[in-house]
Every structure is written in structure tokens, then in C-alpha cells.
Length: 433
Image 1: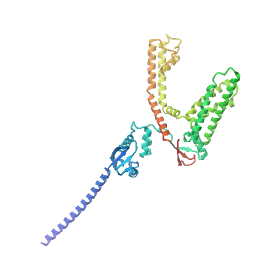
Image 2: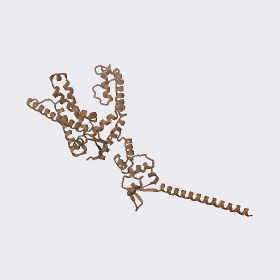
Image 3: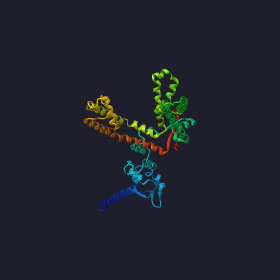
Image 4: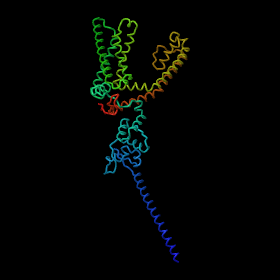
């Protein structure tokens, strides 16, 4: 009997221990479930955002995908919280924010609305602190900052040379730089005017003709002196001499003054008879290209030509093939009818190239039925040859133009104040006027 009671007591004690263990495990499981519920409640907590009166709502977890951004970091967006309406208020562009919210929802996909300009969308991305790398990648996708040098500029260490270099190289950095640029453009136009005026027939009066010639020479000397001073100052103040020598615009500046000094050194009758001086005088025409240093549109056009050289080469190649083919066909179609105008295939190529480019001088026209059919086909082929690659070139031009416009509207020029031997760590922001 006693042994039976002891066994029953032991069983009751073991069952009591089991119940305690199960109870503790259940309590631990309940605590974990409660913690998960709180965490889940926090993750799925909705955030209300007011953008100039338009309400947007999203989950806290959606914004937390990019914690370094303005909306993704609770500390950064706290100052925009309206406690009265329990929402975040931003006086920003509504259409642009629709794309920014989609950036969080799609985990990094940026799509600019067509109703928002590139400049405004760029400003919105900067305000919401989407991230420098994301913005740069998006601008590259838009065609901006493509194949462009880093925006940090190396400046001379000397303050005086730095001011002079900025005035010559970056005229928009100050009012003095703008005045200096206008002064240089004035000399360029004066030199081009003299270049054209020298080719006019001289006056019948020898005295007037001599005075006019002396006036042109004096103006030419003044322009050359200014161009020379400009080249020397820019070379002295340039912080990177090797990069200066690699710049194509500097060789245009050199070609603008080279004819004058060549004539001054080698201006002998023997060289005039050999035609050497005439060849150097042709270089004076290069002065017109000096305007590209001061006119951004010409720079955009030059960069477009360089960037689309494959398309331009394709147009040229297609025109050459078409010219050879139609020259041979037109020659054999028109030779018997017009032996004086279509004398050979090379002579016929003049008519073909004029027709391909849709110029049509009219100095040579086909008269036979086959020749007219070939002329019509030639004109149509020329339209297709030029029109098909044109959208690619136009798109590239628009990309470079938008890039130039963005930099001009942004109004910030980032420069690095260091020499070639110093560390490039001193970054200075210079506001453009």
C-alpha cells in the first residue's frame, strides 16, 4: 500500500514538472509571437506623405529599402512631420514625386514623367537625397554626363594665377571673366572682318587704297598681339601643362597667329612665288573657330560630330557607293544624247552627287527616259541615305545640349584648388552668375 502511494506521488510530481516545462515553453513562445507581432506591425505601418496637397501613402518597409535617403531615414524626415494632420508635408513637385515613390516601390527604378523637365526632376532627386551614385547613373541613362571628364577642375596654387585662369578658361565664373570673353569675341570678329575686307578690290585712288591697306595691317597687328597675349597668359597660368598641349582649341588659337609670324619671319619674294605664304594665309580662316571657346552651342555641335562619327561615316560611305553606281548607269544612259555634258563617269558623278544631296544646280540634267528614271531614283536614295541616320545624330545632339543646359541652370562649378604635385582634396564651390 505504501509503495503504491509512493508511486502515485512520484507520478504526480513528474506530471507537475512536465506541466511547468510546457507552461514555460508556451510563455516563451507567446513572448516571441508578441515580439513578431510588434515587429510586423512596425514593418507594415503606413506612412502618409502630403506633396503640395496630394496625399501619398506607402509602407514603412517600402521607404526603409533605401535608409540613406530623405524618406528612408526617420531622423531626416522628422522635421517635415505635421503633428496636427499626422503626415509628412513637402512643398514639392507632385508629378516628380510620383516617380520618386515608384523608385522605392520598384527597389531602384527611376522613370522621369514626360511632364517634368529634366532640370526639375534633377532638383527633386537632389532634394529627396536619392543618392549621388543613383543620380549619376540616371543622368547617364538620360544621355547626360556621357563621355565627359570629371567635373572637378584643377586650379593654380597662386591666388592671382587662379583668378586669371578662371577669367580666361571659365568666363562665367565672374563678371570680369564675362567682360574678358566679350573683349576676345570682339577681336575675333574684327579680325574676321579684316580678313574679308582685304579681298575687296582696291580703291581707284592710290592714296586711299594705301591708307586703307595700312589701316587693315594695323588692325591685324593689334588682333594678333591680343591673341598672342591670350595664348601666353593661358599657358603660364595653366596648372596642367600637358593637358593644355593636348587641347585642340589651343592649336586653333596657335593657327590664328601663325600666319602673321610666318610672314614676319619668312616674308620674302621667293616664298611668295612658291605659294607658301598663300598656304599660311589660309590658316587665318581658323580664327572663326576661336568662337567655339566662348559659344557653348558650337562646343555642343563639335562634341556631337565627334560622338556620331560612325553615323556620319556611314552616310558618307553610302553616298559614295550610290554615287559610283548611279554615275555609271547615268553615263551609259545619257552619253549618246549629251556627249558634251556627260563626257565620262567622273564628270557624271558631279550630277549624281548634286542629285543625292538634293541640291540640283541644273547645269546638267538628263533628257532620256531612262536617265530621268535614274535621276528620280538617285534623289530618293539620297533622301533615305541622309534621313535614316539623322535621328541618331539629332538624339545625340539633344543629349549634349541638355547636358550643357543642365550645367548652366545648375549654376555650380566644382573646382579643386591644388597643383599637379598637391593632393586633390580641396574642393571649392564657385557659383556662376
